[in-house]
Length: 275
Image (tube, rainbow, N blue to C red; front, side):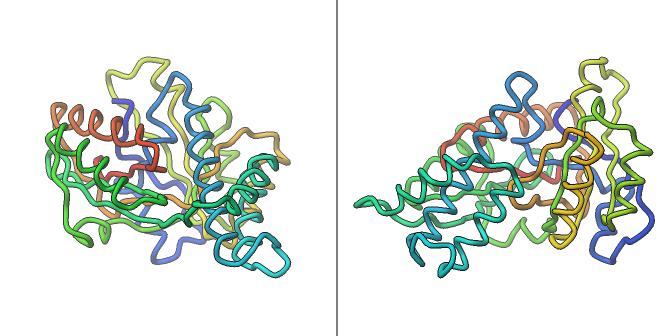
């Protein structure tokens, strides 16, 4: 299955007690918007990333003004945008947008959902209309046969991490390990392989370099120096502590549910602990 699966944490040096949660069979899962779409995956991922950064810019400007010199929150967002290669025109457009009459600040929300086969799903939302976003998420969940969970019921099963995603066709495993060790990454996670995989399936899989926020920029710089194409996260990813194995029917139902959730305008990412 292309959606997700268990993989192996490859790095054994510089593993902290928290980052060790990503190793061995519990190490591989990815945010749906980055890896689930084959056709147009790059454009879809960039669109979600740019939208999220744009909303963060609006919120920062609404709270502290348009100058990054006096607005430390805006300065931090702009620095992250530079790290993630967000075009300057998008940043400038949203700084201007923040001053428009009627434009509200955006609020980050995480909605928790029970999927199929005991799987948990986290929906990351950044919205200026909470009622709109929750109504849209609830409608999709109901239509797909899932169930909304109470806050805190699922999210404790995940850990925050900075993650760099590298397609298997763009890098050599040993080269990534060497880079990760050199810059002090926490782990390198190998993508899953299934018996019924086609060559196309395998070519769409990703290695994941897991990092602390402090080392993230150094990893991106090192990959650029080596000429390795990569996909950054959109500020963080949620990695499951203990992925859950399900049968094919549950996997397909969860895939459909997550596909419909990520299509919602207010949704920036969808995470699952499905193995």
